[in-house]
Length: 300
Image 1 (tube, helix red, strand yellow):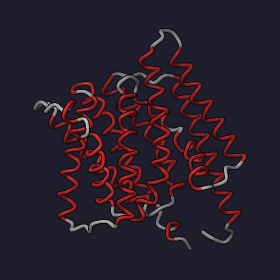
Image 2 (cartoon, helix red, strand yellow):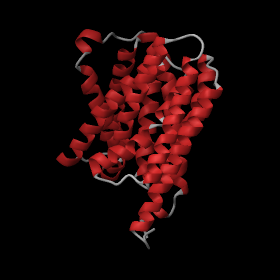
Image 3 (cartoon, helix red, strand yellow):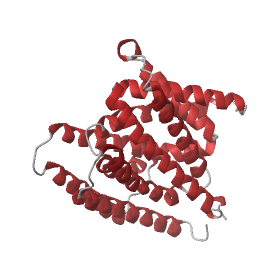
C-alpha cells in the first residue's frame, strides 16, 4: 500500500490551515503593496522571511541540500518570484475573491504543462474539463467588462492569468520538492531565491519602510513562511491530487477577507465563474485518478 493512502486526515487539516494562512497573507500583502508599493512589499517580505528561515535552519540544524535539490529550490524560487510579482500586481487592481477565482485555472494549465514537460497523456475528459474552466474565466471576464470599462482591472486579469501559468508550473515542482526537503528548508530557500531575484532592482527601487509598515512586513513574512512550511509538510505526506482541491477554500477566505478589510463585494458572475473553474478542476482530477487506477490496478 502506498504510504500516502493512510493517515490522510492530518495532512488534509494542515493543508487547510496552510491555505487559510496564505489567504490572510494575500490580504496583508495587498494592504502593504498599496501603502509602500509592490516592489518594496515583496522585497522587504523576502528579507524578513529569509532572516526567519535562516534562524530556523540554524536552530533545527538542517543539513545543506545536495546540488540536485538546490537546483529544484532555485527553479521554484525564480518561478514563484515572477508569479508573486504578477499575482500581487493583479490583486492591487482587482477584488481578492475575483483574483483568487481566476488563479484556480492553474491546475487545468498544469495538465498541459505536465504533458509538455513530463510527457503525460491528456485524456478527452480532461480536455472537456479545461473547456469548462475556460467558460468560467469567460464568465468572470464578462462580469468585469459590464458597465464601466476599467482598463487597469482588465490588465490585472491578464496579469493574474499569466501568474496562473507560473503557478501551474509551481504545482509540478512542488510535489517533487516536498519529497526531497524538509518544510523549513523549502520555505527558507524559496524566500532566499526570491530575495536574490528582487535584490537585482534594490539599488534603484528599494526604500526603507516606515515604522508603521514594519509590523505588516513581519506579519506577511511570518504568514508566508508558516503557510509554505505547512503546505510542504502536507504535500510530502499525501498525494497532490487529493490535496489540490483544498486550494479552492482560498476563494471563501478571499471573499470574507476582501469584504472585511477592503469593502469588496462578491458578484454573482465571480461566484458563477469560480464554480465553473472548480468544477472543471475536479473533473480533471477525477479523470486523472481513473486513468492511474486503470494503468496500475491493485495499487493504492
